[in-house]
Image (cartoon, rainbow, N blue to C red; front, side):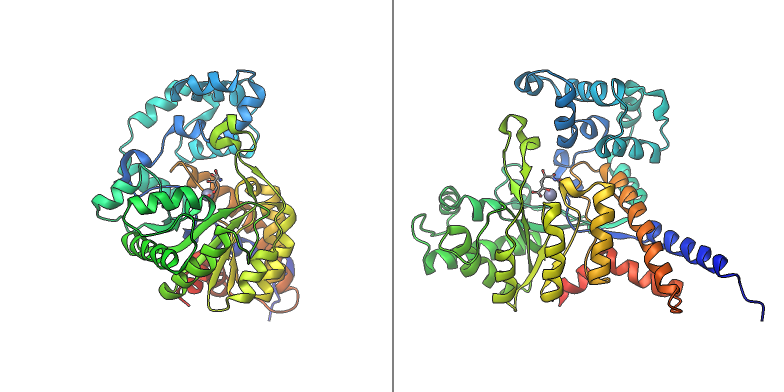
Length: 419
Ligand code: HDL
Ligand code: ZN
């Protein structure tokens, strides 16, 4: 039989892997997008893309305008300042800048014209619902998980009114104010009719907090609960954060069979004058996460951690605890060089039992670039990994590669959630 030269089979395998990674639909398990029923809360279009807080932080390094004067500008003026500072006066080569252009190019727009008014006219002519569908299709996103907070004054009334769900948008119950600002939040819960004691973390308070969590879990059909945490978060402990976690959140998650997503490493407001763009990152002590995974084997934990330096220890924790599912290259890690480093390490340590990426998109159109960029990095590293596999004599079939990639792109998460 005529042997195919090995380099041809290697090239064929590489093409198969790349094609599968670039086209497999993905479940985007953490975003700040909203079901279209939320109206204006679902951000989209060129001006929103340009005033993304990542770009605001970058442009105010190039533009000496005092912060307060920037915030006094209209969204349109802010977008023009960003466009001028980061696209016209400097080449837009940062990840967040390149992302805008990748998205525009995917819509078939000619960015070489560098014509912001023309871009605005194109978006102004778009039908929003058709745009939602086109963005998700271009990104290959089959499902989007929102970040839903009962403490958000704009979001809560929409849930309370009720609306017909768009099945492409699932919900996650975000509880930062409950865990990170207990005294103020206790007052809010009392206003909503929950008999919690601001000063007393006692059984009555814990059961009332669970009643609140149950009500919202059912109202939004929460796929999981989630909280972002500072780097120095401690568990177990006497703090309200630790006590509420142990005696309300974890029992609630066990009762409803839901994962609890922990996102440690955020230093909120390191530069408050940058507002949403003012948060920073810090090295997390992962002891607390280890204590949770070890101490509560009947709870399921999702985790993504903000510091690059925490990623190896996080992957090892996932090896030790099968009730821990790690996900994403979060926020400041969502850049090609770190997605490559982190995902390659995770494949080498965890195989396929993790979720490599989420978009964290705040503007609908961002899913197009965030997934195109991530798919490109993940495809290149998986081409290497399957080539290494084939060199052992174990030749993966296209069906096996498709199965594996579907796992990475939401399948493993869905199985973990359903377990
Ligand atoms: O806390 C979070 O969920 C973070 O993702 C923040 O929303 C952050 O501002 C962000 O958008 N990161 O991408
Ligand atoms: Zn987020």
